[in-house]
Length: 393
Image (spheres, rainbow, N blue to C red):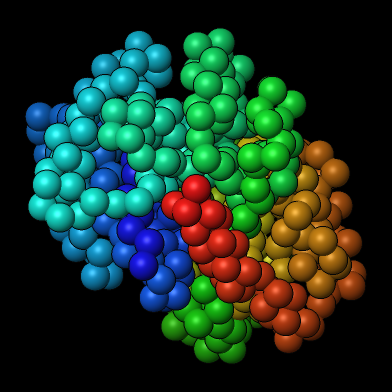
């Protein structure tokens, strides 16, 4: 039995149930092997006041110090994250704040074999500090902006490369991320690609008409679905702007919450398509299958993604995707039954890709079969092999 300590700020809690759910999903799949025992330390920024009026910061404060999720012990120590200078000091405050919690776990009998960190900066860097202080090996999984954006800043880049040199291994959810850190100077021999899988039991096709009736959506419209936080980089605005050039029977449904909702509603109104845009709000992960099944296509107009789980979730429900060709996305959409890649991140490119998709629309069974090639078994086996090598060394 291998004992791991999962360390990451990207982990769900009762206060933020869908935050970093992809990290929890990978852990749950790993635990199914019966060969790993894990406890989670998932720090959250300190904030004095809870409540909806404080938004995300209020949810930080509302996060319990300890909880159990799906049978796993999850600890949420607080760390100091001041505005403006937070990026540079975050790895240090993160590591220092988590250390007492981890030492108590060890005193109470959980003397783990390795630290399994997720998100390279600041989490992976902090895990490197903790590993040094505690005399433990560690691995770090990169997930997207931690390597696609943050290394453009000199100090974080230096800490990331130092961490990569000391880590037993670095894992990327797509090959593009590992290529990027190798180009910065990391040793390719210690880089591994372990893509996210898709939960084929949770995400199964529902009859499209049944799904639309369940959600109260029109039966006779073509529905495009855009899922994700309502922020600029998710590209919901591109979908709204493209709607002007798409047939009148096309309805755009946007599932998600975030600070850009008012601006997006204004954009839809100014573009003359407000009646053809529906905001569904935040949808629980276990309810997404209804929305994917109801849609004719999923849209993902992001400016950056590591490995976007929504793509495979939609395909597992029999619905193809249209997405920007960035980072790991071309590794997901490799065949025409999976969907189409946009030539550029523009409304016109989305219109062109949509026309191409619906001119040769795939059978839902073939879309689902494509997604079935992306289960979790291979990733779980690769993790177990790597963790055994690290602990035996």
